[in-house]
View (cartoon, rainbow, N blue to C red):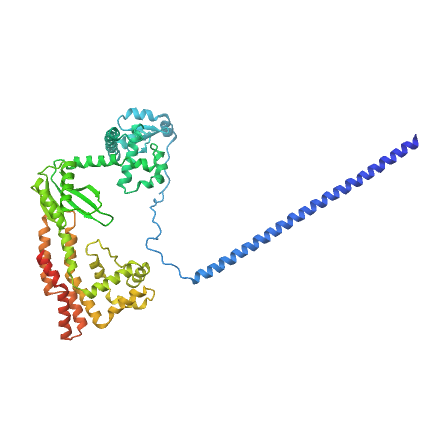
Length: 545
């Protein structure tokens, strides 16, 4: 038994020793694994740091190389529009702000907005987010009684009340127009609440007044719906344009009702054939007002009979202008307009037919006989109209932006010629020293600077400026919106006197001829005759007009 026990004990000890060995071995393995994993982690961290340092070094090197390259490359010249925006700022506070006392805060806390609303009825006060709010001024108001009194006595509040009353009347008028439109057309959305329909009409009207296409509505929709009613897509919103048009016509009818008016009409084919009509009238305060009453898109230009029909229909039928209330009509001197006026006078016998003086005077400029200057001007305008770089080079040389040419603006070519004359000494160096200019146009323009051509070019340029200046000034004076009826005759008479004076003394032309002739009497007389030939037809045209 004892032997067996000893054997068991020895076996137990062996097992325990073997267990200890196994545990020791396993712990050694674990420690080794931990040590190896820590080493891997340290190694990975070290590698990552080296990579980051290398990447930072690469970035720094790239930035340095990029900076050195940027220092060499030419910087583009910014436009004058690319300036830093000026922001209006407040002045810094002077001293400490006063704070309310504890008693004042307690008194203010004890007063409720409803109490002030009951005290000041009819002042458009309400509760908004638990605070006293003025609907007329669209702002919060202090609950202190003196502050409320000062607010309702202010000019701002009075103007706000008037604007709010006007707004209520306008919304009522819009609602009546919508009801009439719905009963006639039955558009989609006619069952919506009237307040929502009125809001949509006001949105459409605001877009039209601001000349913003309704296609842009989607960009404003979320903002407009925050404090208003839900809108719809632009296609359905555009269905409300007839309502806005009817409202505008009704407003104009109220303004010109029983008023003496004049009508201005003209057609244009610039963006498609169209006919426009404008009426002018004088208010009780002696202010001259004008209103656009018709814009009609057409498939072709109208004949005299068709123009007369549109005038009679618009003035008599649509706006109910009486036969004694249409006093004058202004139009250009096209033959079709003359035919139309003779027909309209049957219904409006008191009508005074007035041809547009500015239009007639502008046509006089077409009679300058300047073949060299005309050819030069075509090439000069072409070079600047197709090359922004040319405009920039000219501005760098002269400090002035070259005036752009417009085929529809009165005397636009003369304005370009005037700038060329003022800077004529810079034109030839500008063409010779800038090889980046359009080559074909540059070569053609340089061909005008041979001795004989250059002399005639200068003389024609000076003659056009001298003889055209008074025409240009008169054209712009007579196109204004003021009471020209009191000054028109004097302006035309002053033009005739100025032209007669120019016949005897043309300062720019004389200076150029004296400079170019270099004392040669023969050359001087030849250039004088050339200048006279260039402008003789202009004088005959003025006399015939």
